[in-house]
Image 1 (tube, rainbow, N blue to C red):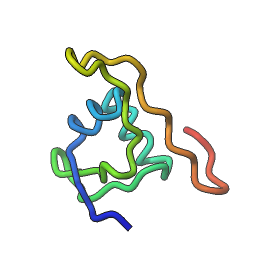
Image 2 (spheres, rainbow, N blue to C red):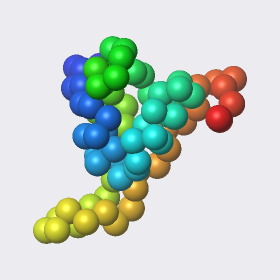
Image 3 (spheres, rainbow, N blue to C red):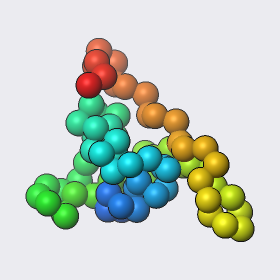
Image 4 (tube, helix red, strand yellow):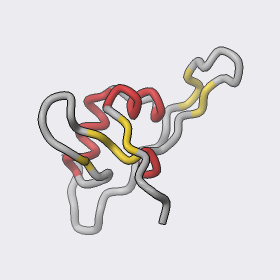
Length: 77
């Protein structure tokens, strides 16, 4: 199992190419794990996040990462 590589919401949003509200929704739905609590203190494991495709030179977003799968028996928000 990979070690924990925790990042804040802003870094997670950049890594996935998705807005921060989507990262929070994924955590609420159980798609990804949330570590910590309180405003500005929550972190996400980068190994659980889908990587966005970005241009090698400009870092411009080409394709956002796919949504992680829902856990068995869960429903999307």
